[in-house]
Length: 102
Image 1: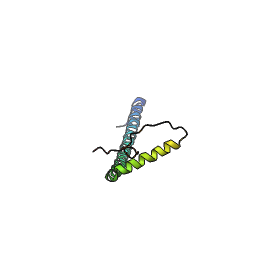
Image 2: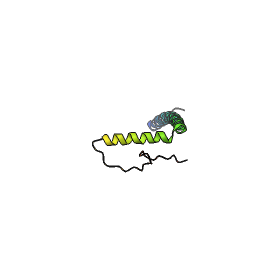
Image 3: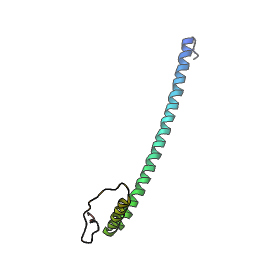
Image 4: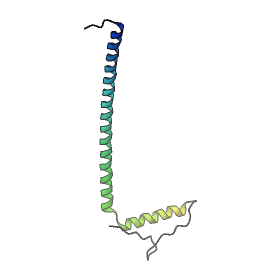
């Protein structure tokens, strides 16, 4: 059926324009959804990598290594021009006490 008046023609064009606009918006939302899914997959893979790194570190972390790191940090602080006195509990041999909590 063909529109007979200008009003009918305008209504048909407006409806067609709206349909095109809605279709474009729907396609845009689908694209955004796909991007969000890919972003989530990337975050999951990053989290897996961090978890694996933590597992490796935790399996090899020792009290001696932690004491070594504490001493190295003290040396860096002592050589810094902006250092101040820091009180650190120390063991019988004068090195920082480090205790792993399990």
